[in-house]
Image (cartoon, rainbow, N blue to C red; front, side):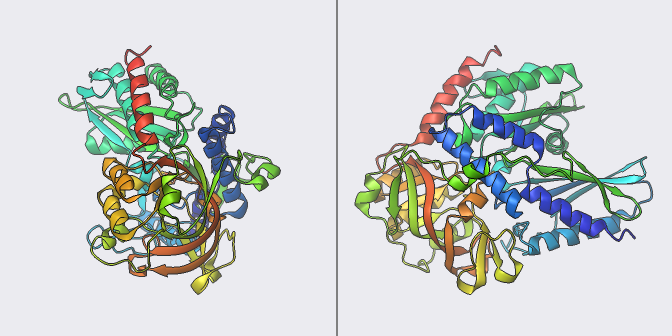
Length: 522
Ligand code: SF4
């Protein structure tokens, strides 16, 4: 059997998780150059650029959500796919143990995390035979926040702000623009979309995701699809959804469209949205040894070109002097003085909480006193001292160290958040993508504010954590447990305040109006 295959897969996973490919770096560099540094978008993109460089230099995950590992494998005729798949699974477990992947495989019925990214359906491995005498493996790590913003349309359809989308290429264009607009900041914009015209509901989504294996700067060989790709890129970036949905020049960094035949009665448009943390790499392997012979999407020997100078990275968060410093616990007066648009630097103790914690708090008393607290929607990558990867800080309580800690999508907690604010006195909620009307009303009634951190900036935020002070609710697994984190100058932007204002509502309305101006395709 191929003695080096498993190790090659571990290398592929580690590099995909930690080092963005050149085409994505280039697109993000252009996005950064398009924004003034002191704007919300400029600050967010500078944090993202720092994060990309930090992840590559410490070989830590770019984003704490290392996503659903999806492998596309091409093998010579006669290759033993059963053995190869087992090796891929072992490599995934090993990369998880090394902290390159977060344990992300959860039993859909019990909620139990397998702890090693293995389980029914995870990882996803697709095989295809080809005539060549070598193996090719491509990998994409697509996180849950952007996966949740995928969209599928059955044409004809009536779309907000765009009117009717017919069974035509213009209807396809409208669907893609609608999907980008709906995503706002929830999928960590600026993102890229893979699109499939046709197929059935299942093959359409699969083919849409496969489009994400194309480089961002390639040209579609079908001139009709190339024209739609160009039009979408131009018009989506007129919407000014901007990085993280903060408003700004760049909402989309790529649009890649494919087509499958369909049944006469069906016309699906499937849109796979990927975030700026567009982690996709590949390798070709010697079919006898499994050793890597070349890297796809990059020159494996050449180090990545940094996004920023070392001085810019060392300078940290780009400050304007208008930032507001807050030390937890937070008072009612402090929180009511915050306004949408304020940039806040939070210090002191914060507690992580995502889906399982929120559900738990609806039925049980909290394990800690949450009065005046900061609740961070985050499922960090946490490793024990001996298994550390990309260590930014010494290990804390119990030998735990956080190696990646960006925000998760907050809207999932919409059913619970207002109740938790009211019951337990939480003052600041930090997450990404914003929350809905129930939480906005809850913030006003209870005296709280929602702060949007920069989604995907897992390395940047890990460096704001001084130590792990403790952990509760470990029965939910490491991403879902409640981590007690001591932080210094953790930056985030107030996007929902205690006075009923929401930046998310504003940007959605403004970008919706702009959608109407591109309705006709001009
Ligand atoms: S960058 Fe955002 S959407 Fe992408 S994986 Fe990370 S948290 Fe999810």
